[in-house]
Amino acid sequence: MNNEFYVGWGTLALINAGLAQGKNRSGLNWFLLSLLLGPIATFCLVISDKK
Image (cartoon, rainbow, N blue to C red; front, side, top):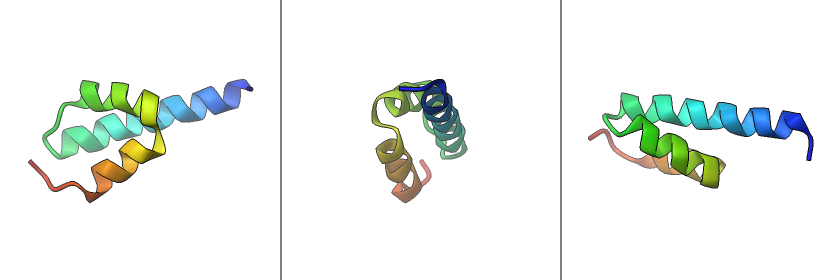
C-alpha cells in the first residue's frame, strides 16, 4: 500500500473525531474506532442523533 492511503484514512479519522465532538460524543473514542472501521464509522456518526 502507498502512503496516500494512510494519509487519507488518518484524515478521515480526524474528521470523524470532529463530527463526534459536534454531536457531544467522545472524539478520542470515535477517532480510534475510525482508524479501525473508516467509512463505516463515518456512516454511523452521520445517521446518529445528537446526544
